[in-house]
Image 1 (cartoon, one colour):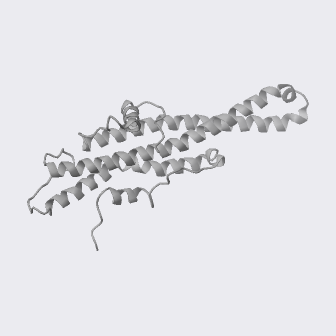
Image 2 (cartoon, helix red, strand yellow; image 1 turned 60 degrees about the horizontal axis):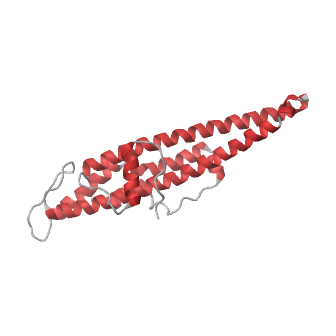
Image 3 (tube, rainbow, N blue to C red; image 1 turned 120 degrees about the horizontal axis):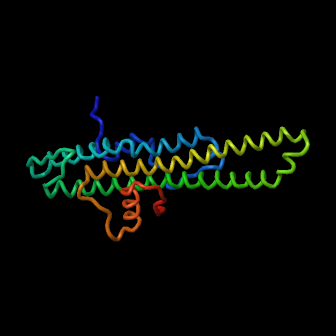
Length: 219
């Protein structure tokens, strides 16, 4: 049996059958089907769930490359410690840069999905509330309107539940970003986004703070 591949590419494939799409294309119906919505979010969160495994695999690949380097000298480092060897440092810095890019990409995809659904559900909720408010007299009038009123109330309450759960997902996102960044920094202690990378700095600061909020959209 051949040995499994190592490195960020193979670990990334463990998370997705294929790289995630450049754009997340969903319909409004997705936002009102919590099981479908949560399944989509769960798929995108696999990148964060496997961050330590992916970093360790990438480190293992670099260790093997150093071991069989052209000089024939033995260079090694442990996955959990910084690299002092210049050649190894160049390799791990490249790996950290690629991993950081993938993390931001995953966060952006989830943000696109979550923002779209939050907006969709809240707009629908506000429209229903306005409709209910404008029909107060009808709701209190003839008994034959009772069934229609009940359906409207149930629809309103269901969407309030959807809205609350989506709001909770924003809080969960903040926790996941913070956890992933802490894990990333433990393996890439020398990495920080370039001062000229405004989007990277914004995502870094948002994740590091552990607070809810929107990061910049990626090009």
